[in-house]
Length: 467
Image 1 (cartoon, rainbow, N blue to C red):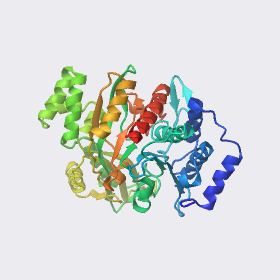
Image 2 (cartoon, one colour):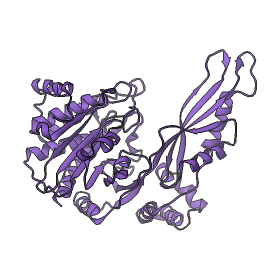
Image 3 (cartoon, helix red, strand yellow):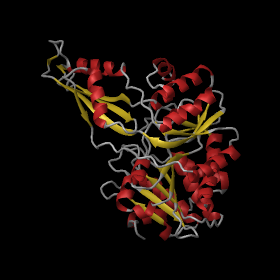
Image 4 (spheres, one colour):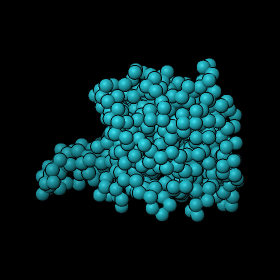
């Protein structure tokens, strides 16, 4: 079968032969799949996306998918960065497919930092804990489960339904599966609409559903390196011009500066709608910032919320540092990584000059870190996209408004959108106000939120496939 290696096929056979696929149907089957996925480490340092892809493939084959329905690929030089693509044929060969997209890899997680083992699924107090419970193995597990359910039900959708679970979205692997698919096997994933991660549901502090957001655009990811070099010397004879001190001063200056408020039609629509939802002083500030992005009082109030602060501008923040060459020597070099999430339409060079101006020190070199930023071109949120979504949301989450918004981060959707495959961040995973500590310690998701999302996304995929 095209896309399979002998090693991958053998791995699938071993899993099937072991009898490990005798999973329970329904919710229990989904829980089993989710647990297996969480407990398969897919971090870049020690993980294996290919193993996870094999496990999903084995489950799909056990549900009745044939070799011709599946593609597995791992780059020969990176055998653990594998991906899986699957399809359920539709009845109308001329109708464009629906693609279900998610990524298998996760951000690094160290056991010594976590309260619980990050790669053991723990259910406690109404939550699932573990790395990837939210980002993005929740959606990956739901998509795999949905494909299994559709096959077991004998579904005959009008449109072909495809699924792509890739590796490399989080940036730790020197390979991005979504980008590879666009460049090398676009026909595997070509579709009329793609359902991806990027947004979701929001809960208030009391666990009440506040709104359901839909990604109508996303920021551009770009790293910059700050570097200070110095002749150094013996640590017994310190001098004022210390590379670490100079870098530290630059970082403090950057932390105390902020880029100007920038808005587009998506963020204007978001804050306009949110103003009516929030009401009171916050609502008035939202209306004021839409009317006048230079309103400093409105900006100051809204920026107290980290999510709104990020919606209003390009953000740049220090994420890593490295300095010195010996404990008993003055540092000859000090570096820091600055991670920027750039507002759509803002050039990378403009952001670089903002950093240079904020630091105001010509001895601190500011350099963009390869690869070059890939700006995502957002597709139009048409009635054909919003219609099924708002209808189903109204049925499952009555009274919860559906609000298009800008994602403060980047996703694999940028590769597909830029290739003309319309991709949207559509998810109904309702998260706590701290965003379930995605990318942080003790990542979690509410059990009921996950189960609700399972039903929502399954029904939504069927709705789009029926059109």
